[in-house]
Image (tube, rainbow, N blue to C red; front, side):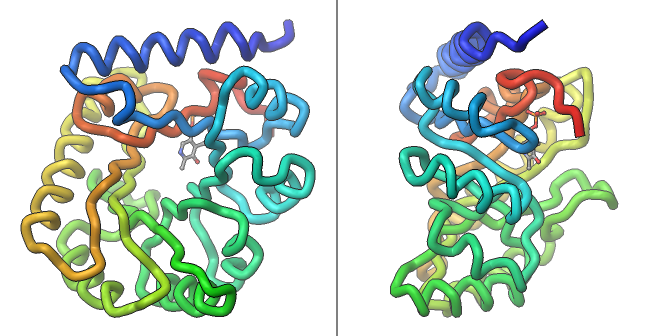
Length: 231
Ligand SMILES: *Cc1c(COP(=O)(O)O)cnc(C)c1O
């Protein structure tokens, strides 16, 4: 059976709204990023017609291929692990890089952004769960890394991102969202030059409601909108 994107999207939006109310927050504080990895451009166009304004991709090649077709009528987010040598392909296409996880990558982004006369906004990806399979900086290394990155002029850190371990029981990962929020508050208090903590990118199809309750401002939702992925 074909996936009903309209119904799925409506369902997700209703759940976001409920979580926002439950957390006593404002709807404007939470931005839905429709994760379109493996989703064909036709289905993306459909989602855009239905009101999706932000899309997330985790692979550079896939992002650039679809960008050719869809263009800049939506805001593009790079949410997957990013290799240094591929920064040049996306630097002029994405609104936000969620997966900054090393000084070397920051340096390359800074260099490429400078070449096109821009400041690239990025989130620092933090591995708050300590899972070995996850990318991201360890919490203990965040402070030093941010101080180094803060000296780069063409990159601006605007928040943090994390991926919680996969679970069927969202309550199990609430603790990791709390940790990211706490870390963000700690960094804010340090008032590091050029480092802002406007956004928390956390929450996926399985756990976005809990993430919103814990302060998520960018939720990255794929399969709940487009159906299970076939790789
Ligand atoms: C695939 C992916 C998502 C979305 O996953 P779903 O469970 O399908 O919602 C979110 N964030 C990242 C980094 C991803 O790679």
